[in-house]
Amino acid sequence: MRLKRVVLIGGSGFVGGWLARQLAERGIRVTVPTRDRRHCKWPTPRPEADFVEVDSNDPQALSTLLAGADAVVNLVGILHDRDPGMPYGAGFAAAHVELPKRIVTAMRANGVRRLVHISALCAATDAPSAYLRSKAAGENALLATNGDVDLTIFRPSVIFGPNDAFLNLFAGLLRIFPVMPLGGAEARFQPVFVGDVAGAICDSLVNAATIGGVYELGGPKVYTLRELVAFTAMQIGRRRLIIALPTWLASLQAQLLGLLPNPPMTPDNLRSMQVANVTDGRHDYPGWQPAALEDVVPGYLLRH
Image 1: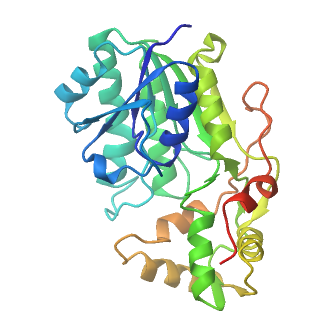
Image 2 (image 1 turned 120 degrees about the vertical axis):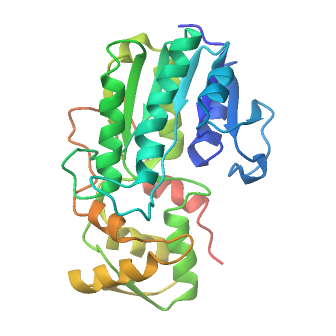
């Protein structure tokens, strides 16, 4: 499957930067739509990507953007939505359900068939959190397109790597506070390296055998949240007391933190952690050999 140009919806974020670099190494040109290029989260400007300032929520603008593309990758995902609607709020609906539908409509209009969609591990219509329910609804909307697109879905666990918003978040808090009160301390995760996620997406785009597949992406080891925070503290050279909060206090903590402009935790995030964020071992990507957390993190979580 020969590709010349790929459009990365939501590509100005953490994963998009890694994916753009890997695609460029294969000689594939990347187009990244963004409302404001100044908000790009890539650490440095990348010559391999064409940034187009456009609102992907505008159907006509989206259709124009996809003209001449060979494939589309949808990386859009939000973790917070202040709308308490059920089964999920308007923010989750717009980002995780309605946008994928508009992408397919724009692809049809331009004769573009290849779509790789990034969902979330444990996405399910009966999941405890609105985030996971909305991700499942987005998957179902795409699966209902009746073969109008050549679809591959990835469900990654929490993604780590340089400039991530996961371990770096804890590192920042651990540098400030001598005690870490932790809600959901026993929640289980299977962190996966961003370079491996980008590699799987890049490979699948040109691998026709992955069309129709739904793949779970996790690292080689499962950790509790407490273990991940303790590991982070060790990496940055801080001795910290980690206190596992009881359920009621964890809920109160999440409610209070959820009031912040860019909350590190919300009640919906806490509900997501009620489900073990680990793969089932039956939906691994072909040839999947992910890097270990311990081999990658020391290279970017510096002691200072």
